[in-house]
Image (cartoon, rainbow, N blue to C red; front, side, top):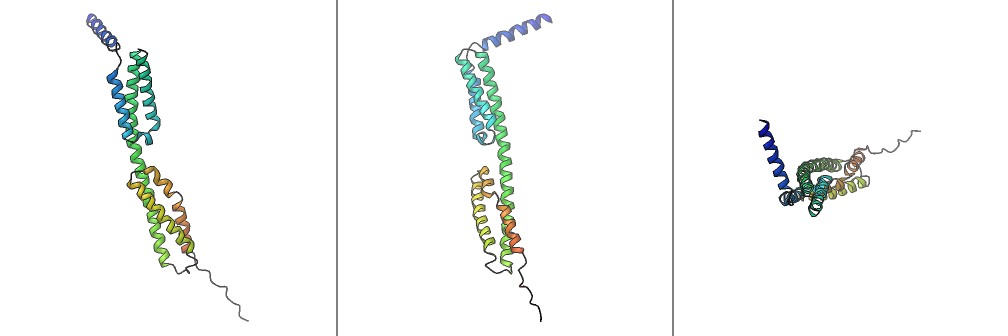
Length: 190
């Protein structure tokens, strides 16, 4: 039994030493492909740190291969491949989260906008009093249109900035629309 274990250990050492006698081109190519796949999945936007680490590990692998340190090159190539796969996974998750958040914000602003438009039409206040809320509603419509366009282009990161502060402005406009009209002070009877 001990003899079989020694033979197996010798075979493993021989295979590893033979595998390290030439550059790990296959593993380096796999790592490069994984990096490109991660970029295609959006890792450059949603998993930048992990993608940078994968690229850096591949660079170190190339440098080690150029220095004929094939074992180190193999280690870095495998590390690069693993990090690139993780970056792709994080990118898919990040993209889904960003999309969900973008859709939530668009829906929230669309609901507030519809409410403000309905209340503006039904308001008994004079037109001059409603001028500021109307301008807020017009600006919100433009911002919502821009956000929906970004959403359609799958530019989820642009939705938040396009609608930043719009919900609060619409809330303020609703407060102005719902404000009771100022009544003229009653005259005193003499």
